Image (cartoon, rainbow, N blue to C red; front, side):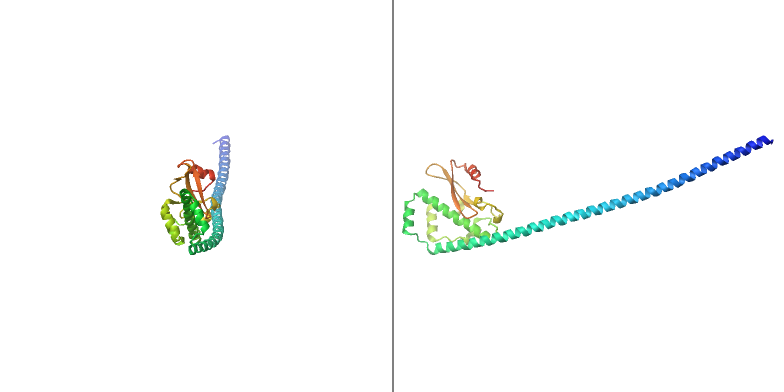
Length: 254
């Protein structure tokens, strides 16, 4: 082999060695970069998982805080409601005692005065009927109120549940029998409701006549008996006109 060929071979070997060395270094650098990138990906995945865990813990703590806040509000409302019911029960019991005293006095002295007899005789049969229906309904609605005073402000579902609070004397019972008045003629509204829930008891109807009756002037009438113990005679131009009259007067019937 001549010298130029040997030199060429050596040069080729050196060039190949340099190229292989550079490729090796490049591969080594790429391997190092890939390893670093893998570590970064693993760290990022770990960080993501940690963030997810923290987010779930934060949501759990937030949900628990909201639940505790709702429970606190519920307990506060219950406490305020209990105080309101306690105050209402005290008021109702005071009214009940007063009404019981009035009823006892009436039962002990049932005989009307001479002036009362004259006034009664001066009334027309229709007026006597209206007066008797109003007195009958008033005694029944007062019995409902007294029942509620003894039962945490809860009204009876039916009128006959409050019979223990009725104190009709013999004269009153006889008059109602003669006029054909009985408890079946009264419709109970808000049976089983809580009396203290009504903000305006003077507008809340607890009892009313089931069927309207006609007055001498041709109008139709119903007796209405309210949660504050008072009673009213309300007239309408037709027998089916009472829904409009109740709305017009702002009565609470449902």
